[in-house]
Image 1 (cartoon, rainbow, N blue to C red):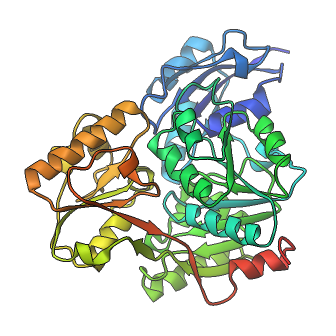
Image 2: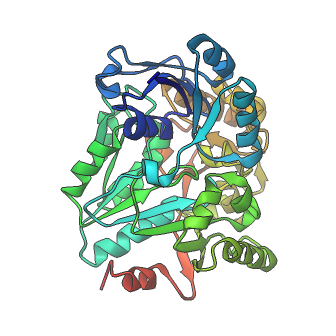
Length: 444
């Protein structure tokens, strides 16, 4: 039988997992290329032979997604497999139209084909969009399990932006491990809070091997999702976080709309920021598509080191990068803190953007009067620092508010005082996560 030639369209995460579990050792297929988008500088690389397996002694090249039609023609491709997340249904079908117009098949792989089965129970934390509140939800679940005496390991959705062979399996137990693995800002934002709470984190590229190692250390594995993707592991309990500030997105973004339909538990976060009407409308939307879903309402109140210092000051707000970029939000925790504590002025860093930050603002124009903390590599971190300095010099701002999940003061030099803004999940009323975990037998 003639081999089917495949291109996997991705963004440096789900694409590699789909290859590993479906195509790597399958002689009926030949993956001729990956394409890359969303994340800067992840094209022009190669999926290495050490990860690709015996069928791919030269590895697999990674091309820009813009070249997809040319790749189809050059390689005689039979099928393109769409393998990334947090995109609108319109975007997915426009992409599908390009592929079908080029004469070949368009494929979406589902959970049964891609979820690995674990010997340990798995709780997955996923969402309908980036920036809904997965991180604080995952921290809360891990803390409840740990306090109940369970051995918990968090496994994070991949962010392999560096040397893929070296990142095959990564284990983070101490803050020094972040430096050891040369983590980006985005990676540190996800791993550092877990480490600070005494939770071991695994991540990397080869999730079958990651799962084996995590199983040796855990009574329960918590899948810490990325973007709005679904889990790489088969969950015993699927918790999905919803955002009433983006009402309707639960129905119109892929694969968040998959998570909507699969959720055992739906957490409506940010109810303190949304109107009662929008919270009710979101509840009705969830139950329309998933009538058996248990719904928890929650807030993510900000925790400010010194809120009184903000009053009347001219401030620069730095926010979580992915939430502002492909998450589509226009503000985050730092902006909320500035408003809550009566900042005199929120300065606009956009005119002073340096290097790659210029392109970030062009691509994501909704980011107004806030600075996205993008840091997918060394150069972006330098550009972020340069933008901070240029903004402070030009505006004479008094104070920097850091709304990222990590303390950027360890990575960037701030010429003005900087205050960190954090946030944790706070359930409102019943049911709550403790009740759900008890009812499901995860804690007694």
